[in-house]
Image (cartoon, rainbow, N blue to C red):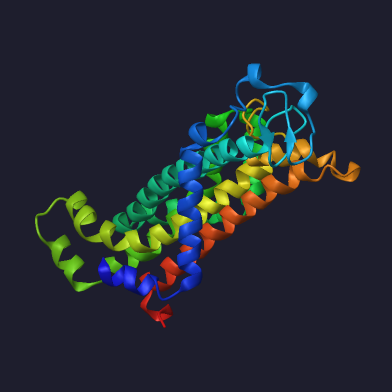
Amino acid sequence: MAGFWREYRENWVAVIALAVVSLVVAAALAAPLITPQDPYDLANLNLMDARRPPGFVGSGGYAHWLGTDAQGRDLYSAILYGLRISLQMGIAAGAVALAIGAALGILAANAGGKIEPAIMRVVDLQLSFPAILLALVLVAVLGQGRVPLIIALVTAQYAYFARTAYGAATAERQKDYVEAARATPLPGRRVVLRHLLPNCLPPLIVVGTVQVANAIALEATLSFLGLGLPPTEPSLGMLIANGFQYMMSGRTWISVYPGIALIILIVAINVVGDQLRDQFNPRLRR
């Protein structure tokens, strides 16, 4: 572990990205403690404070340092609560998609026979469709809400994990120690858990990091289009959508600040994922 961190620190950009991700996660978790307003509580909102510029002192007696949105929500508070929602959706969708995709990929590689082509043809067919298009169709059918959105995100992303797990498990399956283990009376699940799964985890972790960022971007896109979370849950995509109609009138802060927060989070997670990919793949190491 010490050697892994020592190698990670050699890339100062990745270190900054990891610090940014850690700071964002900490701020999102501590949002109820470090924000002046709960954007979910309608009793705290005042429409007279709507669309106020940054630095405005509202009716609550505190300054809105990033301004307010069209519902009178303090934008700083709404962004931190929106980050909580974005992280929750991204991590939940990524974790479920990883579990389903890894199980299918390893099952296909280990079972062989007719099961292998049957699973992988379905995976390849799904990979041929754009993820955003598939998510749009599923959300339109299932409706708004966290559960339908997670189902849509998982369905759009599990194939990436399945393909990655299948490739890694297929490479490990052909090695001598796995063949020797399969020749013993050991149960098949034990061979999978002790030999195939541990060697599939490094590439799955890398793909998982990238897919969490993609899930956050997909959720923001769907919420921006009005097909994601309901308006009562101000995710970053919803905050950007709320201020989009006011861009031409000069009230750019309503969309710009949530957009900056979303970009910083996605870029930082992707940089961390790229560094993990370089470290887990010996061919990419400097």
